[in-house]
Length: 293
Image 1 (cartoon, one colour):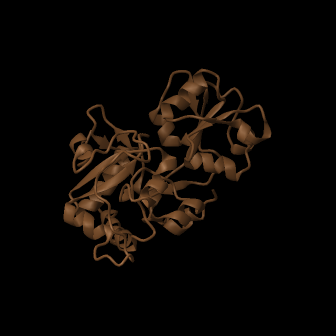
Image 2: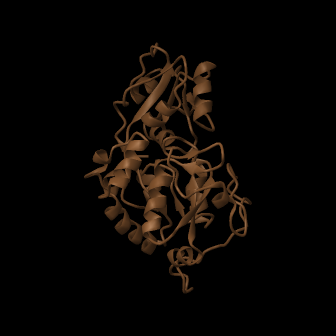
Image 3: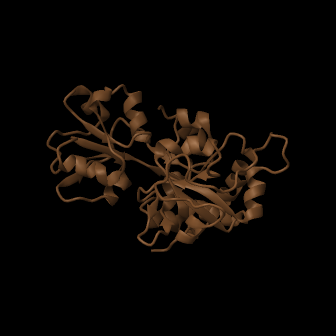
């Protein structure tokens, strides 16, 4: 499988160590970066160009992000972000695996320079950070016991039956969708990762696991089926995430992303991970940032 320039060496390079599954605080003793508008001469973009690498927050949720057995990191988002940054003259990336709910706080606390994790755009997130234009678009599904015995095909089905339990990743897009549609908190089953969600179904601790369709397909598990696209959830999409003050970084990234989208390499990366470049055409950041949640 082709890889990005993100490796275990990159994970551990620099003044400090970026530790897989690191908590939000205390995981890195590396550089801190001056933000635009503080009166200091260098922006984040200036700094990372000078040092030659960027720190990126990632998850470990294929096909969006994936940590290989040897510690190298790949997935559709790191592959795209790495390629775009190289076009900007930034040759390597430090990947830091962190929970979804820590990604935006960690970005705003200057613990990494951008988010490259398939962190779907929605109203609340777009109010906190800047996004690039989208580089992927996808749908949502449920993992359910084989045969889908409860015939779950929508959020409405979950909400209509208080006995239904749905597993979600806290802070993930799906967690926000359920909350925005007023699904009672008592029906949520919090799980730390994709494999734990599948295990919750197997152990009858949840009736469904709510996650992007492609993520669930990558977690294929005997005795568990994946539903079609959920009817009452709009298509979602993601791009790189930046601090509100890093407009120069975001704008420079968007310019290179627009050019990269016209290349065969971009289409190849998306195809390799089960996405389609055609799905992204015509979809804008503004449209995705209007998603509720």
